[in-house]
Amino acid sequence: MGILKKSLSSKSNRSAITIIAEGNKFSGEMNIVGKMHIDGMFEGNINSLDNISIGKTGHVSGNIKAKHMTVSGLLEGEVVCDELHIEKGGKVRAMVLSKIMSIDPAGCFQGERRENASPAYPAAKAVDYESGVDAIDSLPDKITLTTPEKQNS
Image 1 (cartoon, rainbow, N blue to C red):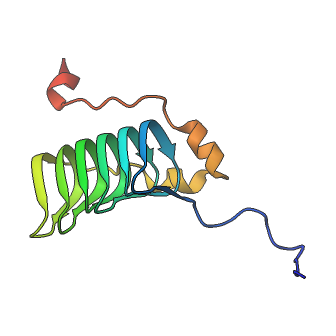
Image 2 (cartoon, rainbow, N blue to C red):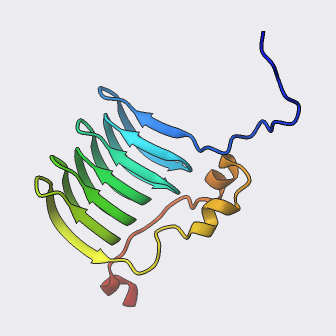
Image 3 (tube, helix red, strand yellow):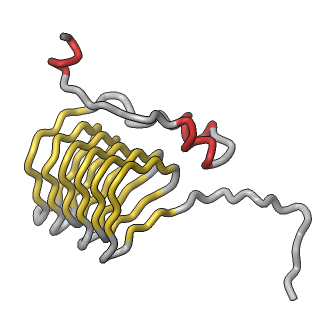
């Protein structure tokens, strides 16, 4: 027998964690509010208001936008984030736009990194939403990353 309290809200204060497990492959576009962990393969675009981690067996290829990225596996493509950390054994082959980037001595980075002065997602946006569904619905359908040279044209 369970005891239920009438004063408890049905809404959780915690955000969900999306996991792509080892052996699974996903391709397409994902707009997520909570954290994401990838041990399988992902091809496409990911927009996250939170953190994304790529495990040792994870392989991500595409355009990623997140608050914080941790890479232990392989990441290829374009990345926009506030902070990127490449852990031991992690490999990043990408164009990176980030405020902070750190690489473990046993990690690997091949590509170009530019400093991003503004946050990937302003903190107020994540707090303003009443529920996760509202946040997902408000994300743009498409994000196009351009170099500064193309923006001036």
